[in-house]
Length: 341
Image 1: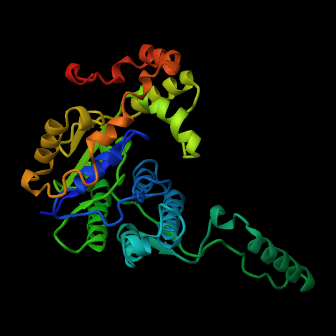
Image 2: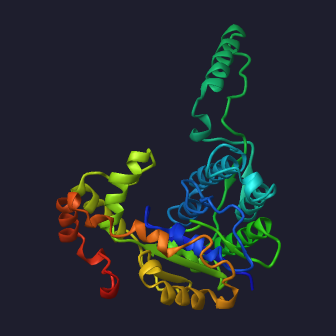
């Protein structure tokens, strides 16, 4: 059975190291290694659609949810210069068609002879038509009333049960995976899932899914973001104020809904370096990989190089901020093995 392998992290946690490591094994497809596959968890993605249709749904809610889902999938499909998009070339030309098929599977009723206020929300094109409509109405002495301009014509009504939604979602995802690669190679898809989505996975995937969640010492997360990445004009997802950082980091962890799914393995970024052999064996066991198929060992992930990204916080100039993190995020700190200090 082909595996779907996902490396996930908490922003700047080093999850790309796992992606690099797994690329070194035989029969792993990671053609677009730098792409983060976001269509499940992005705004208006599949998980948002799940929440809208299964929690507090009604006729108008389902129409809005489906139209936004299709709009987002079309953007991911079409936008060639959007770094998370270009699915037409990255995933395959049938990605958007499968998204439409999925919507058709879960739709109860389609209406074209009615509309509601979200369809009436005016844009520039609609404002022009409304003005023309008003003029025609007045100059014909209220005898001719043109059709009201709408953002879209078709209304989708959808009331799936949980069983129906997940059944067709699984079918959708399976079809997407077959578009990505029709071979029997294992698929390595970076950031297909995030730690905060993992409580959902048993509803969407079978035993083919394997998720490796990577955590990293918050001291190095803060220091590297503030003093290294920001100077390179790279996107930094945390505050540079150490107090705000600690508050945010803790909230980030606390809002995650924990799951004991056997599809998940949690590791520390640092263990890939200081406990490389043991951690690699644990990953192989989790994935069902044979060590003899670690054909390209060291080609993409070299712990002797990545070690430079650890213990950054030990520099004296960071001492005050590091001390604050140590006092406020004690349970998240990584203790380096004594023999490796």
